Each structure stands twice: as C-alpha cells, then as structure tokens.
Amino acid sequence: MLEIRPNCECCDKDLPPDSIEAMICTYECTFCKNCVDEILSNVCPNCGGGFCPRPIRPKMACRPGLSIAHQPASTQRIHTQYSLQDLRDFSALAKSIPPENR
Figure: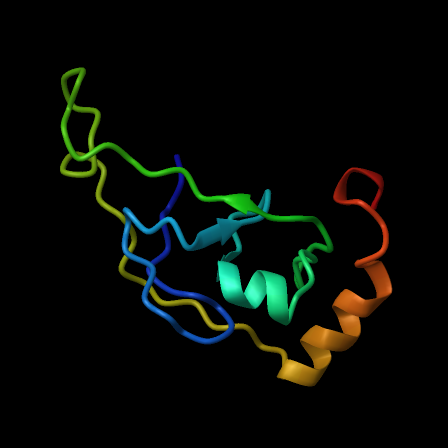
C-alpha cells in the first residue's frame, strides 16, 4: 500500500493526500510536479526511473475499510540527500532516454 508521503523531497512543498501536484516513481519517491518538470526532467534522482501522478486515496469508503480515514497518509517528511546541482547533473545523464528504456 502506498505511504502517500506528505512533501516534495526536493523543495519540501506540502503534498496533501489529495494533491494533484504529487508525482511518484516506482519506489514511491515523491516530488512535486514543478520539481519533476523543472529540476529532475522526469528522472528520479534515486532510481533513475520516471514519474507518474500519485494516486489519490478515496475520502469516502465505497467499500468497508477502504479510505484515507482507514489507511491514513504518512506524516514522515522525506528530503533528498542531493544538492540541486547533483539532481540536475544526474537527470542530465538520462533525460533523453524514455523511462521505459532506462
């Protein structure tokens, strides 16, 4: 089950559970859409993969026990260990290769 992390790992922007700005990679690294587009060039700085919009967990339980109220989002903030220049340099190596070919 997705953790639904609360922030962008790059700029620390709040990304609430219902945010349409949240982007994740296959390992659930979480960044805002602006950082993915402007800094990372759709290259995860951790795994090298691409990003997709993070799914939004339903507010209402359409089936018993299945909602954000029953499986709350994480409150643990995650921050990248890399500098902005490191992020840009890493993404430059792979941004011209489509994620499915990396």
